[in-house]
Amino acid sequence: MISLLIGQSPAILISGLGAMAAVLMLVFKDPILGLVAGIQLSANDMLKLGDWLEMPKYGADGAVIDIGLTTVKVRNWDNTITTIPTWSLVSDSFKNWSGMSASGGRLERHVCVRRPADAGLNAALILTRPVSIFWMMMKNSGC
Figure 1 (tube, rainbow, N blue to C red):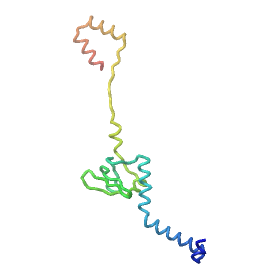
Figure 2 (figure 1 turned 180 degrees about the horizontal axis):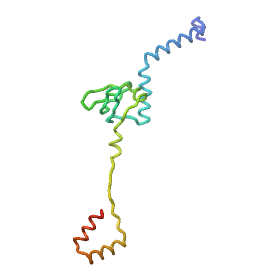
Figure 3 (figure 1 turned 90 degrees about the vertical axis):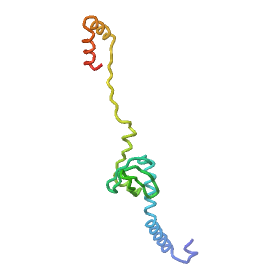
């Protein structure tokens, strides 16, 4: 119908639209890749402001200070700022060290469990042995 109004063949109209779409894709390649990568980063919770990021390919080793449509800015440990394309965070590998602080680290505790039978044994030890020997035995047992 449009081809009748213009007076051209439909093949010319379709090829013209295809060429225009190809040019637009070339011009807007980075914003489109950045938008898709930004959605993937936020949906998968891969990166957020303040995370400590390490990406040797771009020389980045520091805290994320800005996440934009096409770039992510990282303040390195030496106060330099590195700019990384957002799509490279999805296509390349990087280390996000924020999981180390989020886990809370490792905690080790020793727990001494006493049974009621131990109370009678302890009373017998106190009555039959000098107190200093009893405390030395308790200290060496780990309780």
